Image 1 (cartoon, rainbow, N blue to C red):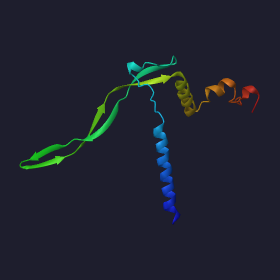
Image 2 (spheres, rainbow, N blue to C red):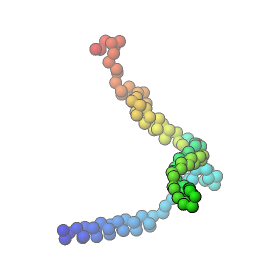
Image 3 (cartoon, helix red, strand yellow):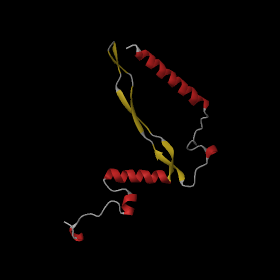
Image 4 (cartoon, rainbow, N blue to C red):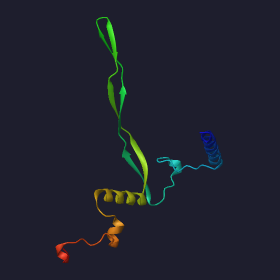
Length: 129
């Protein structure tokens, strides 16, 4: 039990030193989508707009009065936020996403299919039972 505070102290010192090292390095950020001042897209990338519609709920207070007694209630109201968002899509990322969709659907990956790595199916037409 006596070693636990020492271990915690040493771990916290390592974390602080790690944070200090991370602060010394220079941080660079990528291009912001839709920013005309940073229009440096690679040739295989493009900006794509898509609807990013979100629905969220808030409690909106309502006052109901019966004669001289007033009651406040807070029913939940759903608000739909319709916006148009912009994202940068590259050809390599599209291929990876398409491959992931194929795998989720149960199909072999394109690379395996094109190289013949998925094996030959055993059917009666090939003389195999």
